[in-house]
Every structure is written in C-alpha cells, then in structure tokens.
Image (tube, rainbow over all chains, first blue to last red; front, side, top):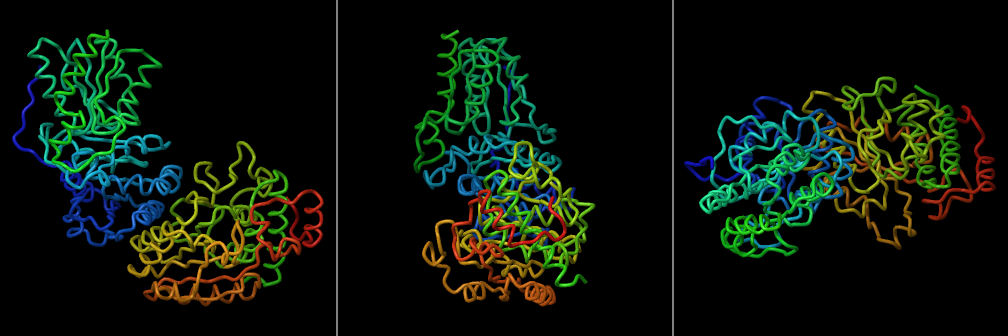
Length: 317
Length: 281
C-alpha cells in the first residue's frame, strides 16, 4: 500500500477561495457572486482584491444564477457560490434553464455540502446535489477530496468552457494531495494499485478510503484505490480497467445512495461489466445535528463502513 | 427613421405570421404575441441598435433583448426573421420536429438572435441584469431590454432582480412589462392581484413609465423618452398596457387565447382582419 501522509488539515472551501484568486489573476473575465455568504465560501480575498468583479446579490439565490448566466452572455466567467443546498435544490430550475440548457459558462461553486457541515442539521445538509446536477445535460460535476485538489480544480474549471458544478465542504480534512498537481477534468486518479477489490471514492470520503485501505492491507486484502474527483463525465476506462482486474467494487461518498457516485458506477457496470458492488453512501435518510465525525459514523459512511463493505463485496465474487 | 405607418404595416404582417405559425401545428401562444407585436416591431425595426446579419452571443456594442415570457415566442421569431436574423421561410417550422424554432426560445438549436432559454417564467430580468453589468464592465455603452409578462410578476425572482438592479444602479437596463392584466387562468386580478404596480416598482427604486403598447406612436415616443433616461443611476421599467389578442376582434377581451390556436375557420376570419402587407412566409 502506497503511504499517504499529511502535515495539516484544511477545509476544501479554502481551497476554492485560494484557487479562485489564482484564476482571477490569470483571467480578468473571472467574476464572483455570492448570496450573503462571502466569508463562509471564502470569497473575502476576492472581494478585497477585485471589488469591481465581485457581486453581492443578497439572500436571493435564484437571481444570482440568472445574473451569472447574463454575465456569461457578456463574456464573463462567473463563479457563483453559496451553500450546496441553496446552490442546487433551491435554484434547480434556474440552473436547468439559464445555465445548463442555455450552455452558459457558469461555475456553480457549492460549499458546506453533505453531512459534514455538521451542527446546522438536515435543512443545510444536502446529500442529493450530485444527483441533481449530474442529471442535467451539459453539466460537469466535480467533487475534489482535499484543499490542494479543490484549489487545482477551481483553477481548472476557469479554463474549461461550459457549465460546472464544483462541490466542496466546511470541515478541515487531511490535505494529502500535492500542492502542484495538475487537475484534469474527467480523469480519475489512481491512489493505490491492488488486486482484490476496487474502491472508488470521492470528496471527503477519499481520505477515509485511504485509511480503510491501510486497515484492509493489514488484514491481507489488497485494495485498488481510485479518486473519482469528477463524477460527470465519469472516467469509464479507469473504472472498467480496474474492475476487470479486481472483480469487486466499493463506492464511497458523502451523498445519498440515490443519484450519487455509486449510482453512476452501478449504471456503468450493469451495462458494461456486471460486477459485485457495495455502496458506502447515505441510504435515503435526512441528516441531523452533530459533529462531522459523529455523523459519518451514525450514517454509515466512515472508514469502518468502507472496510466492512470491501470485506462483504469480496465474498460476493 | 422609419415612418410610423411602415412600422404599423410590419406589425400587421407580424400578426399574420403569429396566427399562421400557431395554426399550422395547432399549438402556441397567440394572445400575448399579438398584444406585443407593436412593441416587438418597434424594437427590432426602429429602436434597437443591432446587427441581424452578424449575430454574436455577446452582442458587443449592440443593444440586447431578452424575452423573459418565452411563451410569446411566435412574435419574437417573426420579428427576428423579418429583421434578417434568419430566413422568413423558417417560420413554417415553428414547433415542429428538428426545428430551430422551439415552442419556447432556446440557445441549444442555435437560432440567431437568442441568447438564453426562456419559458420557465421569472428568470429573464436577472439574466438581463447580468448582461447589463457585463456591458458596463466591458466599457460597452449599449442597452439591455427585457420583456416580461404581467402574470410573470407573481414569480419572486422578478423582485429579487428588481431589488438587485436598483441596489447596483444598473441604469443600462430597460424592463418592459406586458401589462395586459390577463394570464392563463383568467384576469390577474382574479388569479393573483398585482396591486399597484407603479408603486411597487417605484418603491423598489425604479423609474416607472407608462406606454400604450398597441399604439405605435406611443410605443416609439415612450421608448425614445426612456432611452434618454438611461445611465442616470436608476433602472427603468415601462408598464406597457396592451390588449391580449390585439388585432383580432374575437381574440380580444378574453384570456382564452393565451395558449390556444385558431382552427381553420377562425384563422380565415382572423387573417381577414389583418391584410397581408409585406408578404406571407
């Protein structure tokens, strides 16, 4: 098992904020919008450095999406950011019509996604957002795993022409990917080559999967671990090549089972290479208040759940 | 400058186009389209500074128009075709399979003149505000127009955009409300009262203007006046009084032709009231 270490824990939303500054410096057409959450989505530095390219829309997310689409008509590259719940479910129709169907170069940047938002509870803990966004034609869906990767993804999507949903979160998580990584949209990253089971993880669950792989290795199970940072378009070749070797798959994500990464993988495998599959994801339940750590355990999307899923799926080969 | 009578003749032809388009597939929205035919003719043949032969998405150094109430696509398609964006003969494909003239306007089919999809109501003014901001950032001093329905003002997003435009002093945007007091289910006063629209827009920080939208001279005069009132730190809105179904006697005074197409006899009757001017497609 390849060894992964980190020197500090950082929040992925800060990766977004810092990546946005790099993107903004590189391209003067990059503009930013938020709906009364400048600090929470880490846009303070952008607002200070580029006040004329920053738009505070107030608590009016529907308008934010429409304004972003209009700015894109005028050649701007709008990064519209708020909490994931308000960035997707609340404005689904606006995104559908003015961004996705109209194919506008708008970047919807969603913070505080998933359970690990923690104490605010289920009203804010959206776990349907990946599903909502990946269903839209023209929409690219990206869910990076740590600070460095979120920063790199933010820079990459500024250079990509088309609608993007970028998902990140609030908690400080191990920052273990490299600071100078090149982010390639749609390209899965092999973290460890193995032979007994393939683990496909996304977002915060990638580090949990690293921990799980180490535990499994100690038990004599060889894990092939792949970071699926882009849910759509999904890297079919990387997944199928791995699965044809291991013949067993576990997906891991901080999202509902319905509509998430596991669902995309299940579709891919059912059509191309039917294979035993276990999904580590939230099973059709709303979240609740608690610490991120408590919630991951209670909702069965923690390290031990990935370990158990791997052990189980191997028996189904 | 075009003669008012020429614009009126063009608007009459546009009305014929609308009726024939919705008749051929027995679907579409003639009522609001007929009511807005004078405004749309005035915009595309007189007021807008635009280049129909060289359409670009950004429309740099051109005026932009956004149709928020996308269901009145027949009138838009007619004025776009007749002002040169695409062949007039293409109007016959309206709402048919493989057509660029979708039931509601879209970008996906790449019909020149369209910059955003609309149909789900309440969104156009936000888009227009964003495009107007981009123009300011790009040093482009042209204007952005946005037409909405009046029933559409029941959507909350309209008022989000209204607040936003006033707050940011987006003074290069002109909103026009098709104030016909009718929507699918009946009179707006019965479905959901709009209240005092003048006071509402004014209290949101907009300059409010009135227009008789079915009097070409009023349309031209008011648009001319409002253009002079742009770039003065406030957004402008025109409450344009129209008659749904204007130009066809049996389609006026009712909301029933909002989204219904005429049959063969009704079409013949309607066209008899609107004599061919420029020539049918």
